Image 1 (cartoon, rainbow, N blue to C red):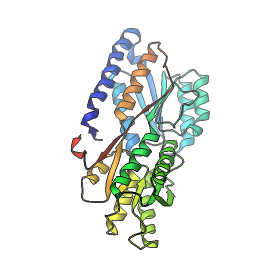
Image 2 (cartoon, rainbow, N blue to C red):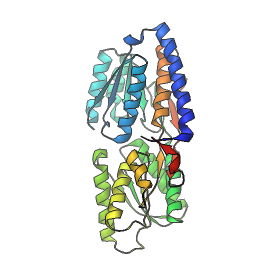
Image 3 (cartoon, rainbow, N blue to C red):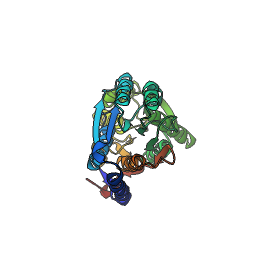
Length: 318
């Protein structure tokens, strides 16, 4: 995952704060006794894998026993794993990229067992029963990605939208992007819904290919807005294959593949960087304070995204 040089200072501060908390934990509670169960159904997606791996590295560095369990998009099993972790009386459960309405059973079990539940990217509003949910600002992600598409198109035009409503964050940023585009005068020619995140690149490729074949005129499509980079990559593939590279596409996540594609002379115009390092760094900081007796001040925090396009691509580094 690539990081903006401009964000390096903020990330360093988050890690320093988290590290400072580690000294307190060592003095008040043996860190080797802290067990953290990370549970996710979305480890197969690039953003989730990066964020969860980054959190595990942070926690392990503090001496915590961090385990990661992935259900491979079986969200019913997430509840079972939460119940198991609650019975084991782990010190904390961390949920990676859950859908709030799908974890009510597991959350109740954790609350009954008095096991705090922390959430990475779990919806777009405060969740009852969780200690802290840290996520990206989905409204901002939708708006700046929509503006990037308008800029790439040279103004309003005909736009194909690709979303995934089961994911609260993608659903909200899709709604915000549509509203922003329409307010600017764009016409939404179709809205396609990906069924499975794991197959989103292929599904988006097929959506775009089918649209181009059904609407063969060069004035039938001016741009494509995709709610995340894997879908945008599928769109870019379809546009490249059809020789329609004049049609721009934007995504969200700033995955390595997307950033590389933006650097080419192709249709991928922009993405939005979600600062997973800052998100998990903040979570680790609050968790460490919680282990030492300081309750979280609030249970919901949002982090802003940063636009990445050809203009600032050189400010990215590995």
